[in-house]
Image (cartoon, rainbow, N blue to C red; front, side):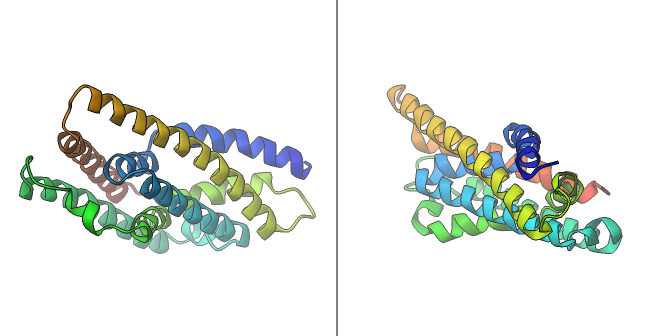
Length: 215
């Protein structure tokens, strides 16, 4: 297997994984609708940075610990589940505290781009299933006589590029939907509350699934 054929083959697998709706998609869409384009791209960049970190760990064999050690996997799984539950419950609690007719969304006044970036990064790093995916898939696409670290980073970068392209389409699509809602005179705050309720519920669902999953 040549480097070119390995990258092409991995791109197909990673591309299919990218377009499947999941936690990353929910976070980027919510960030785009609530905070705008810049925050959505910051969230996506954080997710991509996490993918690069997992790619490097898998290439170096560090993420083999997740498959070899049940304790390490469980610890990361519990931490990730707790983080998702904390975010999801926080969103739902904020909806109960804030009247529909209230002023600007609280997060719009306080969240910085760095905060959106950290949210994407932390969510990705605390998901052990991402690490297991990279550990299982990357070795199959590393040609003989190549640097494992360099190849792992290259493949993770390919995944990142595909992810950013997909997220860009989603972000631009969200802006179109927002414009349509304005034309229909749908309250922006009401739409954001609905999205927050949906995203919070999705995060709780992912958190519970991660907490109850053993693999």
